[in-house]
Image (tube, rainbow, N blue to C red):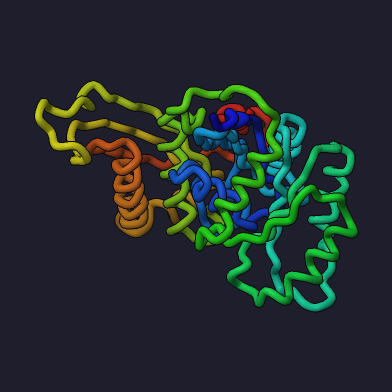
Length: 315
C-alpha cells in the first residue's frame, strides 16, 4: 500500500517593482484572468487573491501593486498594500526581470529597497526571474549570483510568465515550501474578488489600453448598477453558449475636465471603443450577454486626498 501523500496549503505573495509581470504570472498560475494587465506601470492597485487547488495541495497567491517611490496618497496606499502582504503569507515570491542584463549586473535602487524590507520581514523567499525569453540564458548566471549574495533565497526560479515557461515548476517548488495542512478554501474557490470588482477592473483595463499616457494614473472605475435579474439562461441552452442578460452601469472617474474630454473622445468615439471592448471581456467573464452603460465623472484630485481614495474604493 502506497504511503499517503502529505497535503500542503498556505499563502504566497508576489512582490516586486511595477511591470515585472506579477499579474501575468498570477493569471498563468490560476489559468484565469483575475488581474488586469497593461504595459503601463502601477496597473495593479489592490491585493488580488488567486487560489490554485490540486490533489496534493493548495496555494493562495496574492498579487500586489508594484513597489515604487510613493508620491501622493494613491501611491502610498498601493505600496502599503504590497508591503502588508509580506506579513500575511508563508512564502514571498520576489519577482524581478533581467532588464538590460549584462555580465556585470547591479541591483537597482528599487529592488534594493525591497530586499531591505524582506530582510526585516524574515519570511522564506524565492527569487523569481521573469521574462527570461528576453535575454540569453548565460546572461542570467551573473544576475543569479549577484542576488544570492544579497539575500538568502530559498530558491531561484527563472520563468517566462507570458510564455508559460517554468510556471508549473515554480508552482511545484512553492507547494513544497507550504506548511502541511488541510485546504484553506473550498476547491471551487478561485478568488475572493466580487464580480462587480472584476467588472470595474476590466473597464479600467480598457481605459489603460486606449487612452493617452497621462490618463491611467488619474482613473478609477465604480460599478453603479449591476442587475442580474435576467441572467439565468433559458431551459435547453447549450453549455458554453452566451445566454441571459446582465445590465451594468459604471462610472469612470478622472481628476480634470480635460481628462474627461480625452476619455469621451471626438463625438464619443473613445468612450464607445472602451465600452465595446470592456463589454466583450465582461461577457466572457460572466458567461452571459451584457448591456454596459458608461459615463465619465470628474472627482478633482481624488488620488491625492484620503477622502477621495475612500470614495473610490481604495481604503
